[in-house]
Image (cartoon, rainbow, N blue to C red; front, side):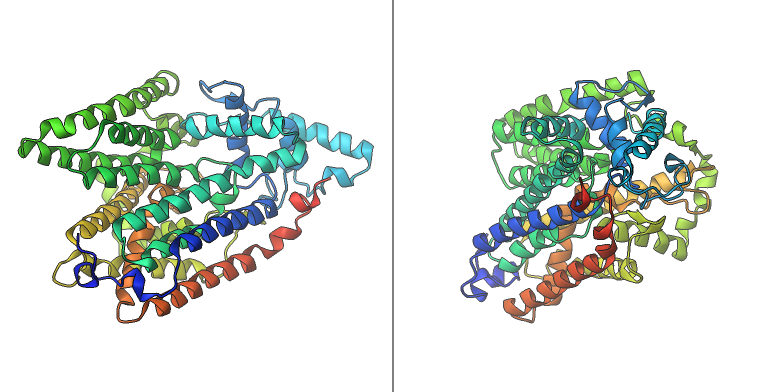
Amino acid sequence: MQNDENATGFKPAAAFPGLHTRKVFFLLCFLAAIHVFIFSVGFPFFNNVDERLHFDLVLKYSHGHVPRGLEPFTPEAAPYLAFFSSPAYRSTDPFFNGEILPPFWTEPVEKMRQDFEWRRVEALSLKNHEASQAPLYYAVAGIWWHIGQWIGLNEGRLLYWLRFFDIVEVVTVVWLAYAVARMVFPENSFIQLAVPALVAFMPQTAFYSVGNDALSPLCFGITFLCLLKWLSSKNPSALLGAATGLAFAATYLTKATNLPLLAVVGAALLFKTGQSFRRGEQRAVLSALLAFLGCAAPPILGWMMWCKSHFGDLTGSKFKAERFGWTVKPFGEWWHHPIFTPGGLWTYLSGQLATFWQGQFKWDNQPLVLPGTDFIYTVLSLVLLVAVLPVLLPRFSKATAWQRRVLLFSLVCFVAGLGFFALMSIIYDFHRCIMPSRQYPYFAFGRMLLGALIPFLLVIVCGLDYLLNRFGTMTKFIILASIISAMLLTEIATDWRVFSDPFNWFHLP
């Protein structure tokens, strides 16, 4: 690869004099940690995105118990649910018995005991329908929970310690984003820093919650980086094959909905292996391939067999579908779905892209977003996704063949995720389910696409870079800073009322 602008079509790092990208990168890691910390402690427990269910699973895994079906909550979880649950997310939830109670620690002792007891009993009656979730996050978070206990944390601060695991995850994703961007665009300081910067300030509420969504971009980010090293090497080592296999397995064991991303990775590896075999370079790739299969296949197959044995199918999805009352529609009815209309397609894409950026928290039973932000995030994403298309064509861009392949692969990863959830939206009849429903038959849960976060941001940053190619690097950074400032200010304005909630970190006894 040549190292001049004419070869890459992107402004080199030298175009921004005095920029020390590594120093800025470390600053981004620090700011990402502060960002996640502040909003994690601002939100009370337990949010509407099944946080109490994920918390229960963490406690079960912390004791080495892997659920075998629809099980009640562990008794250890009940006191936390009873004592620290804020009604702000779901004021009509029967868990609160129709009442809006103040924090127990502000009540007289006798009333606190009475309220605590009936809520503890209510918590023990709950069933955990997330039992078939893949195990990796819960196993690691269970260890993190024990570490918090070992350092002397307890009660509410131990709860928030569990959320602080998101800080580790997000900072690692910032590092991975920087590593990927630097590897693909070694001479473009704007892309190298813009991708991790967007990760650091992304207003995705899954980064402030107990749950497995935030682990997906980390695990697939490692898989993505390993794959790029594999694809760029003529002689991939067995160590690289093993690392790719372990990351591949970790991605699947984090969330089964990462399967479309892994299918794209598998297709890329097959294509690369086929090229090597056609060139007669079998020996050069065979050790890496065997190491990959040896590390990826056993844990994935083992979990599939567990799901088949205890939940009825290889992914555990049948268990959840039955719990919610979903049924597969006859094939002929698939084509009547509103997603095949312009309005329905917009509804699906806007739902996915808006929640991909901002998450799905509710406050007082209303989506926690400012009016108009969903539209802005959707339009901006679509514009930048389209803007990158000329970069993929040699006629319109001077990007190298390697850069075009990486961008195409990144785009396919994100589109594969969108296509997968569109298919799920089409094939199911949701009956009386609240979300998705017959009235809103869309799997528009952008947090489930977070595995593709780094590929997605790489694509849209390249689209932004292409649109601004006539401007200097300093101008690009000014525009990037403006976008990030707008994101952060919008997030602060959206969540400002959250920080005064009497159940959050700032009001703990």
